[in-house]
Image (cartoon, rainbow, N blue to C red):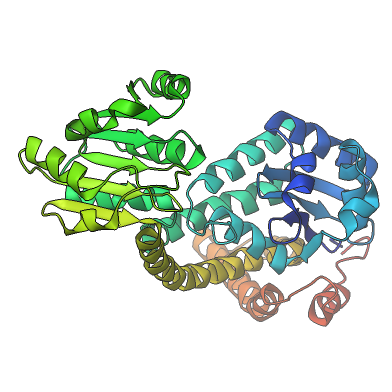
Length: 427
């Protein structure tokens, strides 16, 4: 009889562990395959396993014999491989079993468990680590099925909900607003004032969305030159900022300056020189980099960090509403997968039962037809069809019930094997 199967997911994430611990556990794709092989070698009850490692999580999905696997031993093996003490991990681990493990994987692949719900990168990372497990030979029939199902679920969530449609980061919202002001960014120029991380990220978003050209200005000119080289942009001397202002359709301020970098009069003069073509200013500074009175000028659009956070809040609320729809998709697909998984335990019994019935039917037909040699071919075919129909009708109800059995220990499954003698040596 088929042994009970079980799925586990053991891991930690941004929900349960600090970033320094996640960094120490982080695995590259090739390394993940090596660690998965070690798990198979050292923990006999595991038959298949795969690891997933991103900046926000390190998790292992495994399949095998529930009597032979201690989930804490899995974590211990990973800790040993990364040079960590077991106690360093224990307080931060979570464990999901069976349906809960499947649900967790589906939510991760669909970006419902991400730090930023709806971000698209996670699916590619899940695929990368699944492929690493395939290459390492640690993924078999069960993990092939559950991972491919997770890809399908993520695709459904992406296509059937708007979970990723609204941006929820400052830099991406800034680009979204710019694209509402300008029909296209291809012929526009952005001037980035500052050289910190936020300025760089925002500039990268504008470049990725096709901005025509970029300029960088910074108090330390060498840093402006460095960024300009990286982005194939133009460096601007900080003291000549106002002279370059009329060239900019988008101006991004992201410095720690305590005084305004741009005044209302300076922007008014630049606007006049531009022929009053629209100008979009993004003030990411705290304190603010741009005089708020600039927003009173015609054809000038000024957004500060609070304005952007307000848009983000609205978008986040929209994502949360779409996430509820996504959760319903995940739950229905978990049930679909689980029906397949549970039937793995009953399929061998169903196959054995049908096989035994067919052997008995064939043996009795041969015996009966052997004594009725005077029958023609048509009559013989009719008798064979009748015998097969009786067999199918008798098997219909027990097989239907077996398909609804939830585990190999269930009474119906054990009773069926005893009643039909499926564990006996002969018919």
